[in-house]
Image (cartoon, rainbow over all chains, first blue to last red; front, side, top):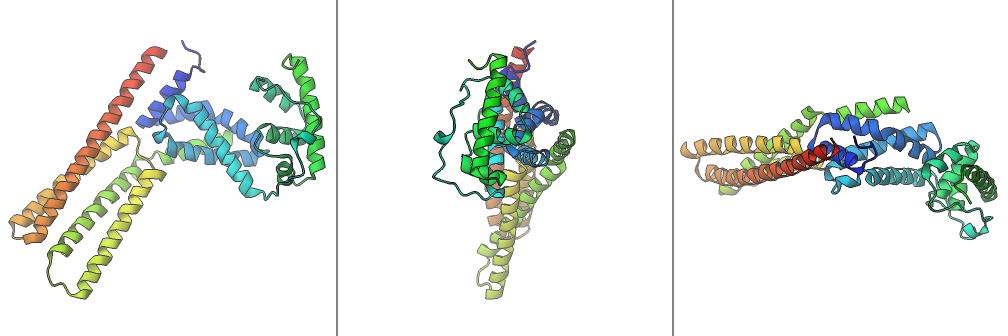
Length: 182
Length: 155
């Protein structure tokens, strides 16, 4: 028996959906709803936003899967849609004014390894206070600047910086414990 | 999250409803047929009064709007999956064949140039329907073959 994360499992699922097999859509939702929800929960910041975002994501998936050119790329395709949905919503919902004076370089250096295991990172982020989780999630997706996050969360830029600094320090500590950080 | 999961499942069931999908296929076929009939009458009747021309134009516009709506829904809102496309192709072939038979009967019954135009446009529609059905069958066969291959590999 092949492991469930065999990419061919996703390809098969995508093809069954493209064929129009109703049971395949149930299987697709059963397999991918929770990972998408968790991903969007992190991006959206709360359960209600995540529920809205995941619904929009599934709407686009149901409409778009028939045109998916590479069924083997189901996984990145799903998360690409989720990410676009979240970013559209966040940009639309929150009016932000980028502050050109604030640069990432202003932050204390507590960078995370680029090749970090996402499951371990998820676990480490989950140990942080909720406010810090939001900041570190938004920042480490590399989509929102400090100024954008400040506007999104309606807090001063300095607060974002201090939360991010605290969160990264706590993350580093967690990751050192888990052996992910040198 | 469980509530959200149930919402998504319900949404998927609604989205995948065959009734709604086939309904739009019928709308597309019926509206296309209406446009063909009206245009056949319009272009083959000589010396039509301005009011009649206006009425034909309005009917053509209305029919074309319905065609556009159905095509938009089937193209982006409720897209046809491979099996649906085969069903839609068969419906289209059946529908256009019936239309041609009707137009031929009209022609034989003295329908004149309007009936002849309808037959001609019906033949074009039938050709398009057959092409769509063949394309849908090829797509269905290709996906089914890959599915079988993957199922064997993953067994």
